[in-house]
Image (cartoon, rainbow, N blue to C red):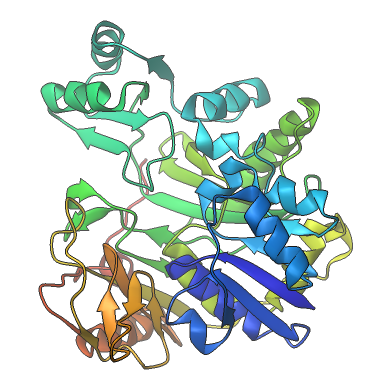
Length: 416
């Protein structure tokens, strides 16, 4: 199988490692890729959000499967353009990707499907936003209605801050706060059949103890030793299959990766959000534990044959990833700094580039690298991930020191 992987971040490096490890893959091409992906794939230049350019590249390289990593190309219709060339694509259509592209659309689908989620209002001006904030009270949850690279959500006790964010976004979804630990569940689907991956937990706030502004994600771990028994079965029954059925009913079936962001509340699991692609950095830990060949799984979803796919196999133990972020992230990350210590197994590239003059590795984004490790248990995986991070040198960089700490120490309590 010849596979074209679209994207160039940490999620795509993790996907590239999984695809390259599948014996059915005879050639892996990544566009545009990154210096880490270059170790396992041929890199090609392309604008990932240009559907015709990606489709043309897929034809040029003779792709048997196109795997679309980021959300922006999906919302732009890249999967549609690839499929129009007769090439299987892993990723939803532009219409189906509205589950991530519009929070309002996602809420409408959830309401129609009877999916348990927070009450919410869509607001486009200060007056309606103020009414919504007063309806729910603090802590206030204000979400940009469109794509925001994981940084469009503000959760605050301060009403003025919430109103300010609503004004900056223009169109927002304001919803009631869901109290309880959060879970990320990835579901591979061909629109009808659906296979859940291991639940994971990520860390959105930039600082230890979940302080500071939201980011694209500062770390993650899997599996979840504290997760309620039967959680995945319950979410598949009450969330995933009703959502897929509703998307089919609308004539826009969702095929690809459905990311279900959950809060485990006192009333049970509630959906915080849907995404239309693998989450970053949860992908790094989930795929590190997946023993089933990745390309075959994604190809089955892309070709409507997932119901015949064998049950998924998982490695024993746990995985942890810790993000190393650039100075100034998330507000205004500094780029162009030299990185050393990133050439070891387990270091996943997210925002890196090579300097043309001498090939030096440079920072080229806010989230620069991830130290990803597995171990026989969560504590061992955590120690190994932080050992990787300590070996990375990048001026001014920062990382959280508490990724998976509460889970290791048994400090995550489910609400009564």
